[in-house]
Length: 136
Length: 126
Image 1 (cartoon, each protein chain N blue to C red):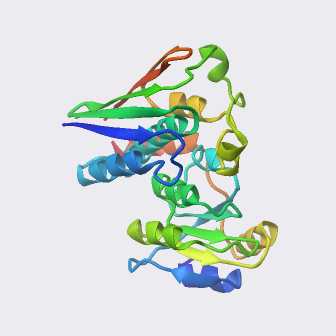
Image 2 (tube, chains in turn blue, green):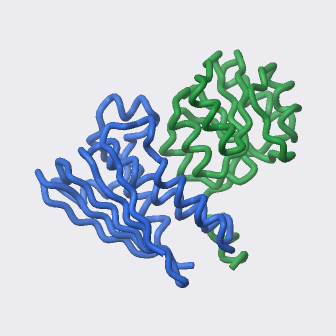
């Protein structure tokens, strides 16, 4: 089962709606609630990163019998230093993002903690690609 | 503790309570949603002064059944709508975050578990 969602940069009112839709889909399957929560947190953090930092992006979700595979790709400023971005507490978020309760530099470390596989690549000035896998 | 009792303790206004009975065992107080996403939130009340749509969305993603907005924050119509769609109880209270937290703690609500523990629980469920 493959679903693709569009994510608009800067649209904080709709931010999280793609993750919410995936969460609702997963709840219909016989998956442990805490596993659904873990996947939802990973997707929400990734989606809010696109909303907070990029111009626009897509979230492609592939639900397989063995797990969920998700690719989040955006057009945006990209990440200059990925190792630095993975550090807890490091953030380049704007004041607007911080006023929404995000931008504390916890997103990427939290994604890494909650998924089974994570691959982050970025070209500064072009965009970022995040590929994650959570096994059922 | 049920939602009505929580509302009484925090001298709140219950704006919405889902039909399904919900019993909360713990609470977490934070204005930082990034931190909410780091902890195990089953049957947990979120106490916050951050009054935005993303507060509701964060609660939905984290399986939080009830939010207490402290410091007299007023919930907007779109926020209430999103809470209703997701079955999240909404309480407004004029008390501070400290006082809401203190009163609920005094009445037996516990702190949340580190998410590390919940992963073990998840493995048990498999």
